[in-house]
Image 1 (cartoon, rainbow, N blue to C red):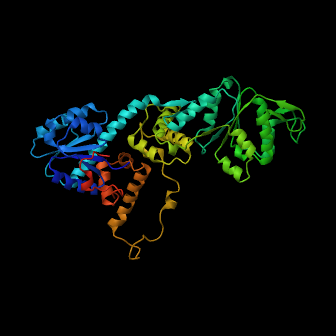
Image 2 (cartoon, rainbow, N blue to C red; image 1 turned 120 degrees about the horizontal axis):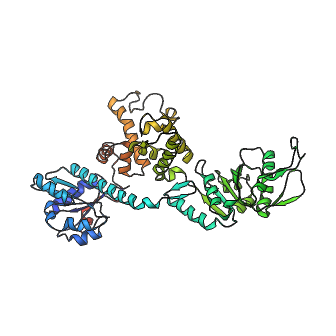
Image 3 (cartoon, rainbow, N blue to C red; image 1 turned 45 degrees about the vertical axis):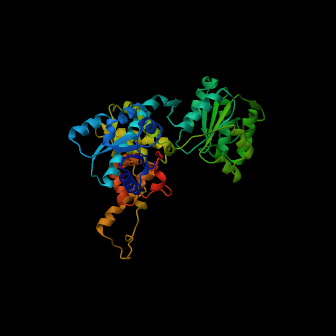
Length: 475
């Protein structure tokens, strides 16, 4: 997230210009509004996060107008002479921060950041309350993610057709659950749902499992055996990890999927079935085709409807939702009702990269439920530290400019702190409030750390230029 947008509404133009320069250097995006201030027009047209004004403006309709707008900027005021009663009345009227002159620009910057953070949190809470009813489930898939919502719409549209479906996505994203959801959403839900993992069987056995075999077809074939295509007749056949099927078998699969006909191994009789085929792969099948490892005609036959399941790190907003879902399930299963995930635990879950996706999250929550020492689950209960973390630490002497291998202790101790701040900002996409939550600090503390380590460099092209700001609203 970019730095807060600040609209300066100060009567003294020299003070406003000077303060704008200082606040712009601190990384805030500053705009100036010339007096006199017509609040209905100004507040109705600005997209500022914070408005800085003189306390004398509180006698106007500033707070009254702001209270009527759904996303008005937070109000910070500068007072010349004031009492504690003035400050209390200002806060009661809707002021976020009440500051007395003189104030150093750095202190004003921190106050503006805090006001923006509080406003953003309030707006986010409102959005969450508004969106609470927008969570949806598709079979056992639970989400608020727009990409999965679109998948749900497609499933609804194609569920009752015979169109083949190809599901792609990393391992653990829920491809099997999605295939089951498609089956259950269709008129075939009364028929069988048959699953086979093509990567779990050798080629010779896989062919027999898919198409069946006749008695005596090979050593150990003591009786006629129907294959998965026959068992799935009238229902759905789910071919998981389809990329693992050999090229020879892919030829027979193509015919079976295209014509719904096949022969058992060791038999000449052609059998036909009414089967809806859903295939899944954690590999890029188009790339497999280009490498000659997957038949192009089979790919296009399967790829009538393509559904890509995003990884869990691509839909981090679903992590708390899924964690609570799994917590309820496992707490009931293991007789550990009443467990709660702490805010720090939730932040740690959101920050984790989840290479194992939903399956890894499910396992982490069940482990935490089983090993919980009290009624709360924090970061330590989820054990999310990477098992390879130790191997990633630098070895040998610490890098120094003089090549001695040593550095001042204070500098050495600050190195991991800076890395933590940078990592939190990276994981949160630059969103300072979320980064502060991940680190367990206030946004003001995070701001001070960023300034300390030189992480507040202004974005090129957005520096304050006094001659170009007067009269423009924020944004």
